[in-house]
Every structure is written in C-alpha cells, then in structure tokens.
Image (cartoon, rainbow, N blue to C red):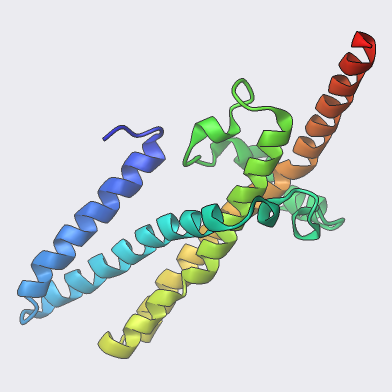
Length: 191
C-alpha cells in the first residue's frame, strides 16, 4: 500500500494496530488488564475510523457543500485577533497535512486550494462532532469520564485543524482573486 504522507501511514498503522489489540483482548477479556487494554484499543480505533468516515461524508456531499462563497466558510471579523492571541502565525506551518498534494501550490490552482481548504474545514468539523460518539461506549463499559476526556481531546484536535484552515482562508481568498484577475487580463489581451 502506498501512502501520500506520513500522516496517512500513521493513521493506517494506528487503526490497524489498535484493531488487532482490541481483537486479541476480546478473547482475554476475563482478565481486567486485557479488558481495559481492549477498551482503550477500541476507543483509539474508533477515533481513527472517524477520520476516514468524516472524509467519506464530505466526499459524498455535492461540491456546493464546500463552496468557498458560503457564509459558513467566510472569515469572521473577530478571527484575526483570536489567531494573533493564540500565536497561529508560528503554529500554522507545523500542522500535519493528511494529503500534502491537496495544498501544493505548484500542483493546484488558487481556486482549487481555496476549495480544498473549505473541504478540509468541513471534514474536521464533522469529525469534531463525531468525536463524541465513543461516549456511547460508557453505556456498555461505564467509565464515562474516560470516554468524555478522549472525546473532548479528539474534538479539540480537529477544531485546531479547523482553525488552521480558517486562519489561512483570507490569504487564499486574496490569492484566488488575484489569480482570477490575471486570468481575465490574459483573456482580454488575447482578444
């Protein structure tokens, strides 16, 4: 299997390993340690799978769902101050990318980059919401605080990626607008 990024490789191996541990522990569940290990593996596996499911959900949506002109993808006036306070300028280049080709300025046009940014935001918002599904495991296994903590941590991680996309959006909008203006100028010059 060929992976486009180290993030894809890590997610694949994390989910595969946690599934294997979960399956092995299922057979040894009469021993408390293995039951705990199995539940932990189940939770890790679930959070890993939610990342795939979120991407599939957005892929199944019409392209208009992630249209950059939609109000939900427009930068808000209060966002720049928040990102400055959180020090995003230093952090933004350290965020891992699941598929680096989607944001490669040498392979994508500015409008494509803008669309990909909105798609990534939508995926991470959906994953953040779905991160609370493992809380339902507490109905079977108890330990609600543990499932709640892992769900909040998972949602927080995805909300960070939403913020990275939103932080970059104003620059991508300007980049796409300048690209569109240059394209119009080329067409006028050709006539």
